[in-house]
Length: 329
Image (tube, rainbow, N blue to C red; front, side, top):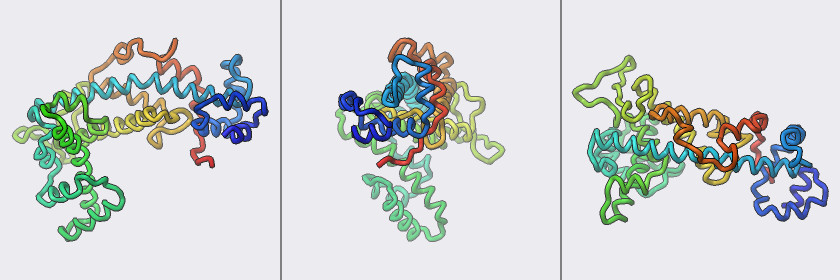
C-alpha cells in the first residue's frame, strides 16, 4: 500500500514512515484518485490551510478527515429524521387501523391487493432473498398459474411480494423472540429506515376511508397524509411517491455514512450531490412539521463551528469535483 501511495501521489521516499503510521491507509484510494484526477486541488487546499498542506499526501489526509467531519455533522439530522418519521407513521397507522397494525398480515395483503395465489407465493418465498434467480422462478410460477397476465403485471406482483416480505419479516421475528411483544417495543428495536419507506410506498394504507373516497383527475383515490406530513401542499399519490423517493436517497447516504464510505466528490444515490441530499433532508423535516431544524439539532457537532452547513462551505470548492469511480487495482 505504501508503494502504491508514493507512486500515485508522486511523493518523496521520506513520506514512507508517516504513511506507515496511518492505520486507515487502505481507505484512501478514492481520495488518492480525486487528487490524481484533479491536481489543482493541491493549490486550492494550500490556499485555505497553508499550515497543513505541504504535498499531495497532506491533501489526501485532509480530504479523508474532512469526509469524516461532514459525515459526523450530518448524522444527527439522519438520526432525528428517522425517529420522527417512525413515530409519525406508527401513530398514524395506529389511529387509522389498530394497535397491532405492524403484525396484521391481512392489512398488508389487502392493501397490496393479494389473492390466494399471491399469499401462497409469499409464504413459499418468505425466507428467500428476492434476487435475480428467485425473480426468474417467481415469473415462471406466475406465468404457469395466470397465463393471461402480462410480464409487466407479474413484475409488479413480485415487487409487492418483496415489499410485504420486507415488512412482515421484522414483525414475525420480533413476535417470535419477545415474550410480551407490543407496538412500542417493536418500533424501538426492529425496523430500519427502509421499513418506514416501504410503508410509505404502499399507497392504499393512506387512502381516504371507503365511504368518503374521492377520486382525483387521474382516477386515483385521494389520500390522507397530513397527520404525518402536516406541511405538504396537497395530499396526493404523486406527493407521497416524491417523499418516499427522497427518503430512499437519504437512506443511501445514511448507509454510506454507517459504513464510513466517501460522501464527498461523488454522486449520492447515483445522481445527487451531497448538498442535494442535505436539502432533501431539511425539506422532509419541514413536511413533517419541524420548521426550525437547526434548533432541533442544537449544539450537536463534531468540532468547533462544526455544523454541516459551515463545514460544507469551508471547502465548498471541493464539492465541484466528482471522482472517476473506476476501481483502482
